[in-house]
Length: 78
Image (cartoon, rainbow, N blue to C red; front, side, top):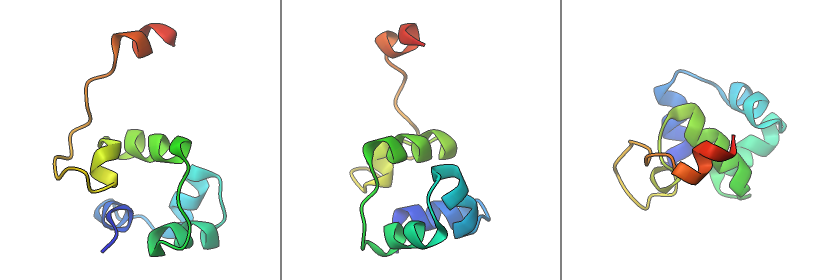
């Protein structure tokens, strides 16, 4: 199963909920879950922050859910 689908279902959300968060159509979001289309870097950031996981977790580069600590540079740029 696709990791973004697992996260969505773990949070009791439907595709329409996520399509609103990402500002795409429900059909487009469905294509992300089925692998027909790929998310942008910005969309991955939005999802990782929303679910409080790392992008590596979403992309199956790790099974550790916890996000990485924020960069000092990133903190100071906001």
